[in-house]
Image (cartoon, rainbow, N blue to C red; front, side):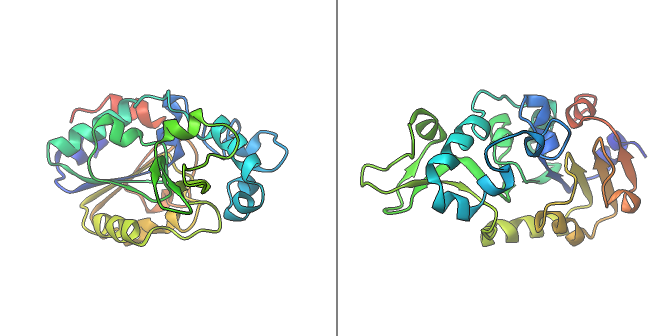
Length: 235
């Protein structure tokens, strides 16, 4: 079956996506040849994006974060838009994403489980007040709350646990799907990569440019860019 036929015949679709979903919106991924992990900084990006680094080198964290993690100019691509259409028509149960850019919501998706949090919510570590991504982008140095507390993005840094409620919602959605579309992810980041094991449905599809550990278990593997694949689909 083609992806279009599988979508046409399914009523409980869940989409599980990674960085490759947003690359066509101009946001670099992490592990490809041009990804963040293959660029040169004073510290490795994996170290900068850790809870320990945030605590010890907060100013250096924010220098990298503003430069590379706040693409507020980015717009949803064909994949984001098509998924929002599928949800509106009652065919898509949820989006489960490893991305923190908020582009699924910007495209109109309502049920989105952001496993690694979002750049669009930021919290004062002292009083709990919330701040927008724009506030962080327009601040200088370490962003501070009026109360004097340091503001931290609501993103899951290395060394931090995933949010329990988000995890429960994502697992429930995946386990209840009849079609799971996994796209734009290397499936090498844990624990997020392990969520696919909760799928109990009939049809498993992978859309990714490179080989993944899941390939052999899929009914259909498509080696193309995610946005290009979804642009061809009818909702």
